[in-house]
Length: 232
Length: 232
Image 1 (tube, rainbow over the protein chains, first blue to last red):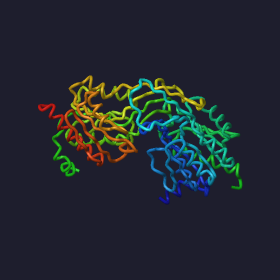
Image 2: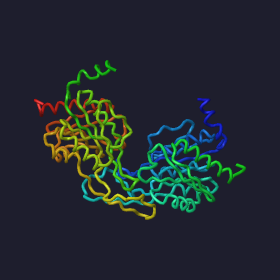
Image 3: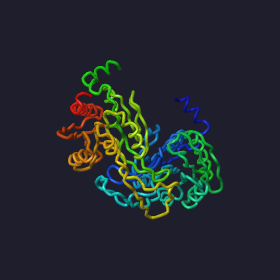
Image 4: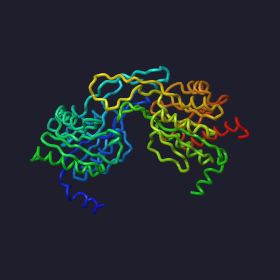
């Protein structure tokens, strides 16, 4: 294990040494009633791979995770949450201490306006579910902590690059990693490809397994982080 | 393994010998757009435990399963499905050959009227999701196959027994197993308790692990099945 740790980390070990990295991962669940909920196809694999890779690069990692079927990586502090509202509260509580925030979670954009206290019966032919916007975790955290180096994710089915740069600017992010989820790509798959965009540059990481991709992404994150904060 | 198999099966081995048992399990997912869906808290554990127990009692088991994080039990034929519509089609295809049908799946009662082709953007402050009733898998199968010995499940948050007997009569079922899912009970838990109801009787199976419960339930199913069909 020591040999493996040494061989896998030597080239990138120091990159995040001693940095506190806060990561969100997985989907959220928005309750409709006690048994039904809205969710999405995020498996959490990308976020968990980043948590593992950041730990291997010397970071202290806190992972705020929605419900997923994954084991917590060794030495990572995991905090389990369910809804978008839960995720916001947990992330706010840990953002103050963080150096880098990487938001991979597929947080629900909408949540039911009211939650039924009892299981809704199958009576009405048509049911209208009224939903309201959730509070944007990424934008809220960046607004409250402008100095926090913040990396967003964007999963889009179309116009991936245009949405990515738009999201970067609109939310004032330091970096964004965008992927296409059209045709079942990325979500719940072992591989992924990313377009990584920052203020004055971008690069493409071609399709590879999510663990290798996590390392490559963190190398870019570390490079930009140390460029912005050369004395950190 | 042989010793374990012999010791665990001797008392109940013959009960379903050669019977073809069709089981549905797990939740369904009803797509809203390419990444979001409606679902429920069913883990599939009860259905998978029944599939395993029925196999141990000598049955040939076909398991129609929604998306779950469970291994298929040995010697069980599993058919994976996603939506309520998928589950209906797969169940119809296998009902003709079955002797006993046990419907544990938490099939969605409602599904979006239309599915967005692209990921819905977070623009509108309020989003109205219009949903229509799904076709009732259990009632449809029983209507098409009145001679098929059919066991329903009911998961209710309130008035469990009243709903159970109502469902038994309304859908013309042979037996129904009802549980309370109030306060997080049953769904995704290792234990469960059931109220088992048939035309002229009922019995309570107290809280126990789902594998033991599956065996106890199948003993009741086999007894009623052989009472109705003494020469089968």
